Amino acid sequence: MRQPLDPAGSRYRTPRRRRARLLAGICALVAPVVSTTVTAPAATAATPTLNLLYANDFSGFFGGMTNWGLVGDRVLVGDWNGDGRDTVAVRRGLTVYFRDSLTSGGSNRVINYGRATDQVVVGDWNGDGKDSLGVRRGNTFLLADAIGDTPPTTHEFTWGRSTDAVLVGDWNGDGRDTFALRRGSTIYVSNSLSNRTDLTFNYGLATDTAVSGDWNGDRIDSFGVRRGNTYYLRDAVSGGAATRTVAWGQPSDTVVFGDWDGNRAVTPMAVRADNPRYRVWVLTNGERAKAGRAALKYSDCLEIKYAQPWAAYMARTGDFRHQSLLQGRCAKDLTGENIAAGYLTPEAVMSAWMNSPGHKENILRPQFSIMGVGVADSTDAYRKYWVQNFG
Image 1 (cartoon, one colour):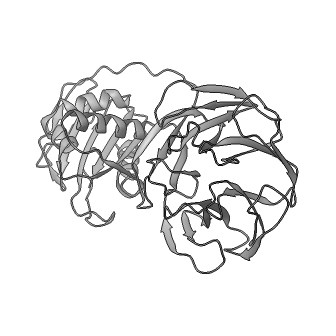
Image 2 (spheres, helix red, strand yellow; image 1 turned 135 degrees about the vertical axis):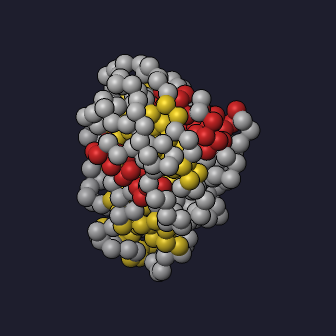
Image 3 (cartoon, one colour; image 1 turned 180 degrees about the horizontal axis):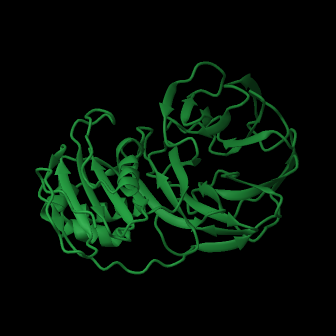
């Protein structure tokens, strides 16, 4: 059995039995080792779910998460109840499940909609402040002004080619959503629910993924393109240079956009498979809320550059110690770290950390504003290694 390191790096003997291990540090300083045994609940098989991680700006950090929907669902975004905030729905087969808040829980309404081969689109077609659904079937658009089980079609028209990419937005600020088509790098804009093209221009590269939204909160949607995890956003409905260029999320993310906080500006949400890293983040913010501390934003940078590689290293080598925390790599100078081994669930490791003064101090430290988490499975007796990094 490996032997834990004490703060000075020397080794001391432990009983020859499996023990969960903790190590806490602040700004790369190693605090006393605390050994704690935690009985973790047995792992159970579960249907893969989705983590929906959203941001209220393009700063690169996630501001919140909801755990909703199943892997394989298509995520739809809209203001379903007219409260000025976008939430989500998921389409599973022909069934659409709506949720009126960015929280986990049951569906507020469930309907069947369209055909399996339809592309479902979302917009406020009549300007009543509520989004509803429509389908694109080939190059025919069938839209309804209210949400219901495939209700009578309110608007129907044929436009463009079935291979064109479809974008939805209010391009002229009249409060009604219409469509744009993208063919190669050319965008065709219509300000009515018809086959009339009102504006044509080029934007981005033909290989880019086109996106649309009200990026600056002026109540007029415009365009952008996604290239890997870099977004080139333009605040005008025209060709030209990007108004801003931002890096956000990971290239493998499915990304949707919405106004999550009701400030009129549209920001991103990453759709990812359920991962215990994000559960640790939620539990950490729960503990901070109880202590009157501000919530921590989640940093992909801290996860990718610090937490996940170090968890993987410890799981691979059994070298249970702190890493060298290089300041400034994630635009923050103050960095702390908690590590642990032997805890099988986010709840178990958080309980152990919160019952250890050094780790609890890191979790509740008011100077921290961001965090990232790493977790890796091992083949040794400890089975899982965990890392929290703070900045």
